[in-house]
Image (spheres, rainbow, N blue to C red):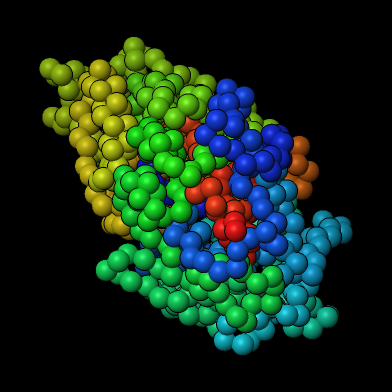
Length: 559
């Protein structure tokens, strides 16, 4: 997840229809009107790269909790950090096809017999944690227990898939073989256990919740934790000499937490080696004018979404939420946001699938259709009558708070555009600006907001990641459902989609669930984020990834 424009996890087993492009795009190489590639990086063979070097990698925030499976660690920036150090068991190509990473898994096989699904993992014999202990079934067992939702003391970001597992055990091949038996089939089983965290830390609730706060004490990747500098707002990882795979080309990666508004200037000054341009027009112009820079484009794996807090006194009424949705011109918001980056503005019509994914269809219907007259009529029907410029009901003004990140000019401008649209419907919207490093922990997660915008970064599993965004909260267990709404019917359809092993049938169920999520009108997709990355020309094997996994050991600089 990402607050507004900054770099969340934290979504599809369908393929990306665009073709793989290995060529290196320059600022003139790719016509925006031709449509984005599925993935575009400066792809260079390892033999042609320099050995050594330091990569300066900008982030929006470095979270205190580095456990991305924990509710407080679900930011995409945290995932980028931890995937350099932890076992990412499954890797995705640019088409969203997922296969086991041989550095960690010799094989991963699912078999279903008489309705019973069993997945067997065979772990690479060389795979070890940084404390010297082998990676075994015990790590899978601890991960399952922490995330299956049965113990509320484990504050997991999602239970999806783990809650369908009946048993995790040692396989007949020994500690390096893992047998996972499902109580109900799970079509997206490849989404589980990745990245994997060590049982030595997460087997207890205290370890799971706090064991990765501040630093990563036990790792198992091409890089290892080196240091964290709170003053400089950096986290450094260094090449792990105990890594058994291909030797990383880089010596170190320095992750730098910078105000997103400062990314373009830092890039132009040579302080960082690349950055996500996103929808920032000024940043796009700076990147175009920076010598020795290239601009890479690909179909983004994230979308921008307006979220309403369904526990807010005014927004508990779904009629009011639907009226707000109809008072907002999503196409105009997209046009304003994307006009400066040469990216086609198109409202997104689906919560669970992106346009380049098989099965995508626009399910927005009337809720997602701009109709200010219908919005005003709906508010009046719900008892909110105009009293001057602002509506009122039972002596209460229709006033809402819009939460945005300070220092993010685009997010603030977006808030002002929405503010003007809602004003026409008799709604007063107040903009509240807070620092990015506390936006989620102090405001969004506790529910201290009315409206905000969030960008959700997806992985190739539509149910596994999305379910936690839309499943009905149970008490304080809301997972990633920041809107805090939902229905039993939506939950049932998401569960049905999760257990459906036929991809075509799963897509049909996903779209049925999506239509109901639109009716809840608590999360309103705005547009697919532009996948635009500005990079130094010498930087290789990293760029506009799309759905393609980053291979950290292959990142480097040309000679």
